[in-house]
Image (cartoon, rainbow, N blue to C red; front, top):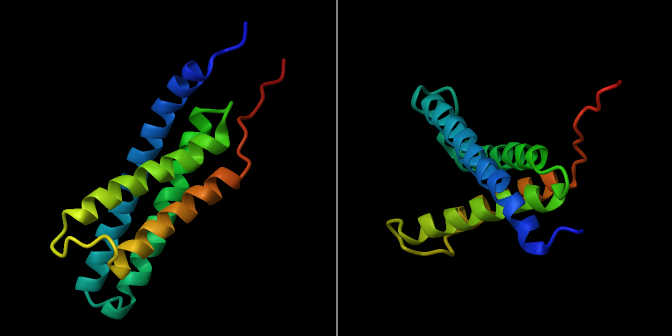
Length: 133
């Protein structure tokens, strides 16, 4: 008896949520390290927006790959899904920021870098190692 679509969706949700959480954790760690380097004068302040986008890209890539490892059956959807959920949360956060504008240049570039990291994680072929008998 084949699985229904609703049970497929229920199987995807834990991996996507785990990948989204890991996306935000890795991104936060990178941004904290980046801000410490900028405060210490090791990195110029003008380079900070570009490095924040790179941190968001790497965080989304790592979160998407982790979500793919959790959901082997539909790996592409879970990798991209984790980036979409992370971008949606970022959109909600940016709506409640000081400017209240979603179309701020910095916010849109961060959201696009998160989506690009998720799309790349969905495209990368990650397989679990098979055990020999």
